[in-house]
Amino acid sequence: AEVSTQSTLEFQTFQHYIKQINFIMPKVKRVKKTAAAPVASAKAKKGANPLIERRPKNFSIGGDIQPKRDLRRFVKWPKYVRLQRQKKTLFQRLKVPPSVNQFTMTLDKSTATSLFKLMRKYKPETAAEKKERLRSMAEAEKTESGKKPVVVKYGLNHVTGLIEKKKAQLVVIAHDVDPIELVVWLPALCRKMNVPYCIVKGKARLGQLVHKKTAAAVCLTAVKPEDKNALNNLISTVKTNYNDRFDEIRKTRGGGNKENSSFY
Image 1: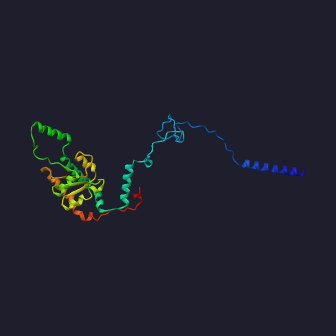
Image 2 (image 1 turned 30 degrees about the vertical axis):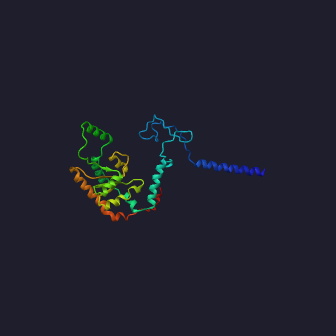
Image 3 (image 1 turned 90 degrees about the horizontal axis):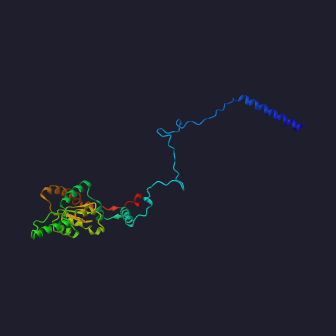
């Protein structure tokens, strides 16, 4: 009986304190929230059309189609592409001798443009043009065609012979001849015979001048009187950049780059 009386007193005391707390705390009126109209919603973006439903894409398995990405890093490239990239890396890493490194010193863009502009005027005739010329000669019963035309000379053996005879006025060598041993001696021969020479980008560009796929070297033996001034300007530029820099070129090695970027 004493235990029950004590617990009753404790419960009454607890109720008394709860009533006091409820009396002290102010009562807050609960207001029922209503959903705002879609037009007046704060989250709606400016300029967004409320009539168009937003449909975010799901790129998980079985969801939307993945967007196109640049996967060239993971492509298994053809062998010739891998070889040319490996070759480039080797030329950066290894010490390249001066005789090979000189083919990286190509003619600047503006000079090369004016050089090709001049040489395009002296393209040799195509097979169709030659056939037509011979036919017209046969119809006219001529045995000689008159004066030899002034054209660009091509072919490694032919160009070498013209340099040795000092008939070549300007020699143009491609920088990307493969194997390089075909032309690696040609600059030294030009310097020995005191013939102006230059190295330009692209054996394919030289090939276009003579109606071939590629050409290792071409040369000019003569030009028309109206083009002599342009040729003399080119010869002076070329001599300054190549013939007169013989001592510097023969001592300049290439490669030997130990940076991390040369590995890739």
